[in-house]
Length: 90
Image: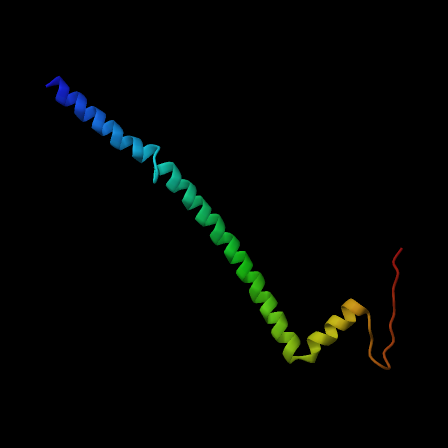
């Protein structure tokens, strides 16, 4: 009878070992869930960035206003017959 109980305890311990330490353990599942969560957040941020870039490209392809705005801000260009005032603060 003692041999049966000992054998059962050894089998239960062996089965529990895989659950807690082996492949597919609770710790590994938790680490994978954390990894998936962080990757999902990174993907969301990259999608937002891509959507903004896509909208900017579309705006630059279709409208002259976006091109004019870029030229004014980045290159400092002005239109003909405009006067440019540069205000320097103390």
